[in-house]
Image 1 (tube, helix red, strand yellow):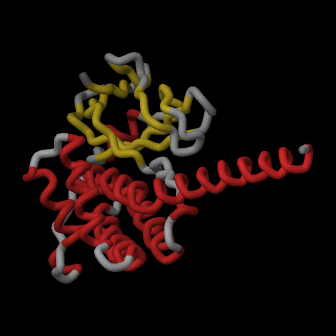
Image 2 (cartoon, one colour):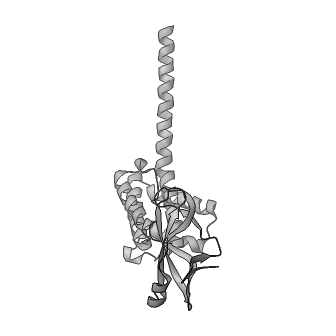
Image 3 (cartoon, one colour):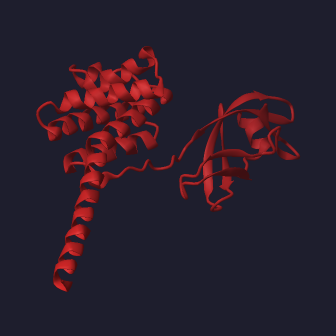
Length: 230
């Protein structure tokens, strides 16, 4: 299945000209329809290796920029591979308020690297965010975090070979130059594992502590009201 831009008829696709992805503006997973397509004559003349198309989000009507690799040029048409690169990615969300301030700053920068497809810069910032988190957890913090990560691997059913880069990034003792080079799939695993680790070590504890304080407050208020009415 391919996308075809014809010289006289514009874009044609075997999948009704639509792709589905998470919009970088509204955050909704929606269909995208072609809005702006380059002129086929110009493409046939210049023969670039990649072509940019602008799609419109069906949810919010925002323009979304996608880059496609050219499959082949023919006499009156250009055929593109269906795989594309998102030039603008949705921002990753997290309950940052529960993280220690220093860890929060580093993790925000890590997520920014990920959203901009800078996966190896993302790995470096994950290492720094992890080190900051271990320090904030205190004695035994790194071991506790390691146990949470191993539980996540077991729950997700990730094979050891695929999980090895994640453990090396988060718990390796070498320099940043010794960090493994990550592809998109490996960076995605690292992202979800680190988010889960932070959730278990900080967010869960913070939410539970806050919820118990609220419960105790209302119990105390109820007891005071009962004492006053007696």
